[in-house]
Image (tube, rainbow, N blue to C red):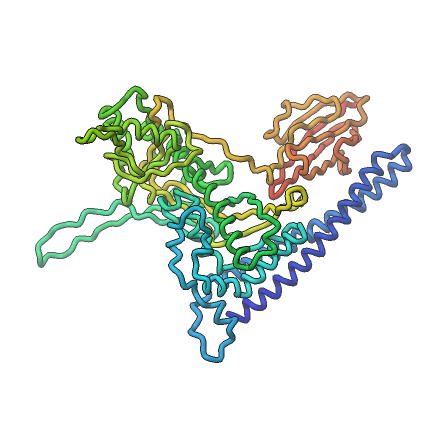
Length: 572
C-alpha cells in the first residue's frame, strides 16, 4: 500500500511539471491570438484576407490540439489525486513503530495528541492551532506534507503568483483541526447532522419505529416491520477569498500554519450557515430549510425512495400579529413552534434570528421579580418552547427559523483546498496575497416538517435571500447582435437559440457578443452549408444565400454557454 502511494505521488509530481509547461505554452498561444486579431483588423485586400484566413485556420487547429492536451493533463492529474486520496482513506492504521523506525515515518503516522473538540469553545481572539501544546504544533509542522504545504504558501506570497496547475490540498495533519475550527465560525454546524463522504451520496433514514407487541411469556415473538427511506445529496463547492499579509512569509512555520487554518475555517464556516437556512440547489448549493418549506409542489428531482413529500408552505411558514404582547404573544409563538411536530423528532431544537429580533424577544419577555427588578427571561434559550438561540445577522428582521437540527443532513467531503488570487493586482497595491479556502458539501432537510419559519412583525417570512453571484463561472452574455438584423425572440441571456432574416443585398454582418464577465472567453463561428469559418468578436461574418448558422461559445471558469443564431439570407 505504501509503495503504491509513493508511486502515485511521483506520478502526480511528474504530471504537475507537465501541466506547468503546458500552461506556460498557453501564454505564447494567447500572444499569437492577439497578434492575429490585430492582423484581421488591418486586412484591406482580398489577398491579405486569404493569407490571414490561412493563418487563423492553422492557429485554430493548433489551439484545439493545445486545449485538448491541457484538458487531458488536468483530468489525468485529478484522477491521480483521487486515486491517492482513496488509497489514503482506505489505508489501515499503521502498526506501532519499532525502535529502528525512521523518525519522519513515526511523526507522519502519529495521531494528534489533543482533544480537538475543545477548539469549539475557544474565544474568538484565539487561533485554533495555538490552542495545541507547543510540542504538538512542532510535531505537526514537521511532517513532510505539512512542510511542503507551508513551503508552497511561502512561495506564493514571495513570488506573488497563483497556484500553478491545480489547487493545494490541505495536508491531512491540518484537516481535523480545520473541521473542528469551522464550528466556531458556523453556528449551525453545531445543530445539524453532519456526515463526511465523497461525491453524490444517499443517507438512509429509519422510518417510524413500530410499536412492540405484548404476548405470553412463552409465546412466539411477533416480527416487527421496520421501513427505511433515503435522502440523496449531491456535491457543491463553497469557498471565499481571505487576505493574508505578505509579512507572514517571514514568520515561523507554526505562525503561518495557524493563520492558514484560521483563514480557511472562517471563510467556509460563515457560508455554510446561510446555505443551511436559505440555500437553493439552482445556485449550486445545499437546499435550505426555508426554501424547502416554501415549496408548493413536489420537486421534479424528489427521490423515489425519499420520505413522502407534503405541502408545508401554509402550515410551517407562519406570520404572528405584531401587536401581540405578554402571555398572548408567547402563547401564539408556542403554538406556531408546535408545527414542528413529526413522529421523527429527536434531539434539541434551535432557533435562528438576527440581533434585532432577539432584542425584540427579550423586550416581549420582560417581567418584574418579587424584589421589583425587571428581567428578560431570554438568555440564549427560547423560553417555554426550549431550544438554543443562534444569532445570525443575515436573517431578515422579525424572522425566526428553527426546529430539530438533527433532521437536517449536511454531507461534507473529506477534502479541503486552498488557492491564491491569479491576478496579483491586489497583492502589489496592498502588500497582501488573496488566498481562498474551499470545500465541497451538500445538504437538505431530511424531514421538512420538523422545521418552521415564523415572522413576529406581522409580515410574511422571507423565503429567499440573495447570494453573491458565482462570477467565477458566469458564462452568460449581456448582449448579442448580428449587424442590424432583428433577432427572434429578442435577446435574453438565458435564451440560447435565435433566428434572423437578411435581405439578398446583406452579404455580411458584424457579430458582437458582450459577456457579463469581461474576462470570459468568446469563440464565434459561422457555418454556411459545409463550410465553417471563425469570426473575431466584433468582426464581420460572411452570409451566403440560404441558411447561415452563427455559433457563439462563451467559457468562464467551469461553465460554458453556446448561443446560436440562424440567419436566412434571401435569394436574389
